[in-house]
Length: 356
Image (cartoon, rainbow, N blue to C red; front, side, top):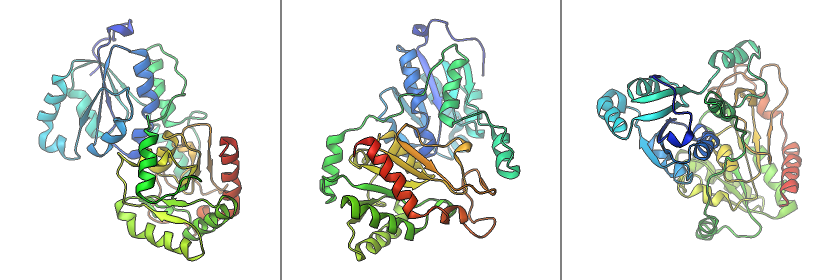
């Protein structure tokens, strides 16, 4: 609850708490703000409250001094204990809620803090864009920029520059050897799966893209995904191998403590609007993000200069804020219209710019 303004001298700020419970891409989009906070409030301890599965990522962000885990039912079952635990490390001069959902609203109302800042979500404006195709969102708005705008309320104007995880490339090379991925040439990573199937580019398109890239660079295609996507990843790799391509599926084989380091060894990643696209950007590799039912106007473009977010011009886009269970028109034209040849040329441009 807001009580007073924090000290005007940043050296007098000793405790900062950041709330962002999920998901993968959303947690990664907090990195620019975390690093900016660390630069401005050099003497402050920055605590980050999130779900336990994202702790390995935060260990790669030196700006975070302390992590606090929240499970989905913690507020309902152990709310008082959790709040007491958080308050024991306070009081906080700044509390930044980057999630703004019922759970984080409950937390921020009970945690002792001098000032609370809430990142703008533009929920109404995003729904208007989806339902009525009426775009009232701020020009060039992105979620990460929205987080940084909180600092303007404190009198600091910060540009989005540093968004990278701190990667151990030697560990990445070790993981590549362990999984029989030859280096060089570096592999091209594919993130073909999504929790919402409407956000998936066609499997046959990935196979054709792999054929085109193999003819040019003779590189290995590295298929990534979750444990639930392990069988699909193996099946896709097998289809590529049947036509003589080098393909390896590590879907479900790597955890978040390993995956960023291995990704750093890849020349690029191609995938849909998923967390892995944001992870690739945070690892500093060129990224080709294929958007279908969603669009970058909803705020989730991958960060960095060396990436391309591509989507077809259709009057029905966006049809969902996060991707639906099925296409409202029954066509999936947004995913079918972008052909492998176009994706290949875009990927070639990315690699040429990166000198890879």
